Image 1 (tube, rainbow, N blue to C red):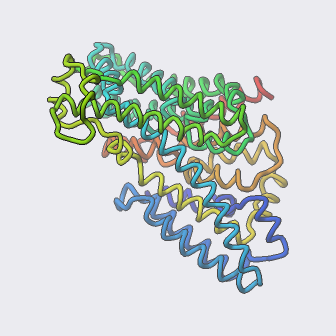
Image 2: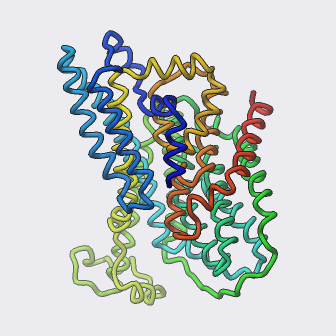
Image 3: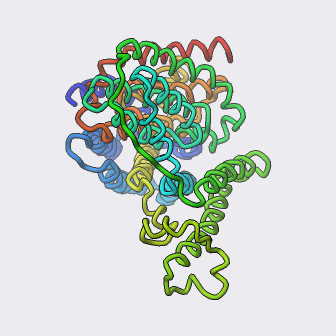
Length: 484
C-alpha cells in the first residue's frame, strides 16, 4: 500500500486538479472569483485528499469507502458556503450543491433499479446455474481461463462490470482450489474482461452510464468500441494465458436450479433496458425514468410471486385471500418449503450495494465542492487546452488506474471540454480499460480483492500491470485506426 501512495503522490498536480473540476455552468458563474489560492479552498483540497487516502486504504484498515467521503463532502460544502458568503455570493453555493444533488439522484435511482434486477436474478438462481455449469465442466485450467474471461466480457455490457467480476471471480476461486497462481491470473483476467466489456455499453460501467446520461455519446454510438474492447482483453489475456497451466482442476460436482419466474425476470430486465434507451433516444427524457418504470413492473411481478409463494405456505396474510389460489402451481410447492419464506422484492432492494451508492454521493459532492472554488479553469488550461484532448484523454486512463475511474470521469464530465465524438469515445475507452491497470482502479478490481482475499491482492495484480498496459495501448491504437 505504500507504493500506492507513492504513485498517487507522483501523479502530481494534474490528478489533484482533475479530481476537483466543476461544471462549466458553475465555472462561468464564479468566473469573477479567485478562490483557488484562498485558505478555505486549500483546506477543502486537503480534506478531500485525506478522505480519499482512507478510501484507497479500505482493504487494509477495513473502513467502508463511503464513510470518509460523505464526511468530507459535508466539510467541503461548509467551506464553500463560508467562502461564497465572504465573496458576497451567498445564494450561489445553494445553486451549485443543488446541481450536484440532481446529478447524484439520477445516477442513484438508475443504479438502484439495475441492482434490484441483478439481485432478483441472483435470488432466482440464474447466476448459480451458470456457476454450477462451469465448475462441473471438466475443462483444463487454461480452457477455463479463456471461458471465464469470455463470459465476463460478454456478460459485463448487461450485468455491469462489478456484478460480473464478483460472479466470475467466485467461479475462478472454486476452480483454482489450492492453485494460487491460477486464481491470481484468473481474477486479473476477469477484471480486465469485465472492464473491457463494460466499455461499449452504457449498462456496463458507471463511467459509460455517466457519458450516456450526459448526452455526449448516444446508445448506439458506443458499439464502435466493440473491436477496441475485444483487443484490450484478448491481448492482455493472451499474455496472461502463457503462464496458466494445462492441468485439470479437481472434479467438482455441483447442481443448481432456477427458481420459478427466474427467466421471466431476465426478460423483464431486457425490456427495462429497452425502456431506458427508448425514453432517452425517442422521448428525450432521462433514461432513469425508463429504469424506474421497469423497476415498477418488476415489483408488480414480485407481487404475483409473493401471492403464489404465500399460497404454498398456507400463510394467513392479507396478501392471500379469496381467489389468490388461482396463482398456485402445486408442482413448485417443494421450492417454497425449501426456501422457507415467500418472495419479497424489498429484500432484493435492501441487498443493493449501499456502500457503493453512498460513495457516489460523497464523491460527486466532494468533486463538485472543490470545483466551486474555481479549479476548473486551471485544469482545462493545463490538460485539454495545453496538452490537447488526445494526450489528456490517454492520461485519464492512468489517472483512472491510480484513483478510480468513477471520480475521474465525473470530473472530466463536469469540466465539459469541447471535444468531438471520437474524443468522447476515446475517453470512454481509456477510463474503462485504464482502470484495469491497477486493482484499485475500478469497482470490479476492488470487489474481486475482497472475493479472493489474501490471494488476489494489489501487488499480485501489479506484477502483471505491464501486460495490461500493452492491451491498453493496443486498444487505443485500434480506436484510432478504426474510428479516427
